[in-house]
Image (cartoon, rainbow, N blue to C red; front, side, top):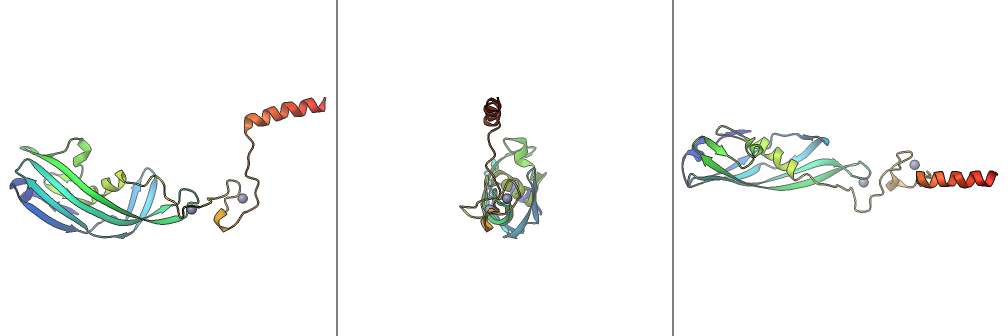
Length: 174
Ligand SMILES: [Zn+2]
Ligand SMILES: [Zn+2]
């Protein structure tokens, strides 16, 4: 959602509280596309501090379906992400320290979905497990090992060991 914040940018020591619905229905990144299963409106507090800086505070609260790192079953993962931005107000507009800091600003329009997207990306969980002791899937047949053992032989010998084994076998043959 694009929100006009020109009134806050132009008047010093003003403050505005906003409650903005999240427009995203899924989250797409290099890692894939993940459905957003539940989302709360983002509560944002925007403060103009003496016409010098713009503070954006808030929290994004949503549930995203992320595959388990071991068995790939979708896990409803709750993300509560604090939003904490400080931008500099300049004569030409609002600037961040890095160019990507302000991709969610279009002139004096604040694109809250872009802001939330960037925050999810930064806070993406490294590892998601359906349960602490998830056994994962069988490397041979793909069976879910949480539902029982499939009986496959999964201990693949080290290829270096295998070649040594070959040499031994050749000796035996002689
Ligand atoms: Zn799992
Ligand atoms: Zn198997």
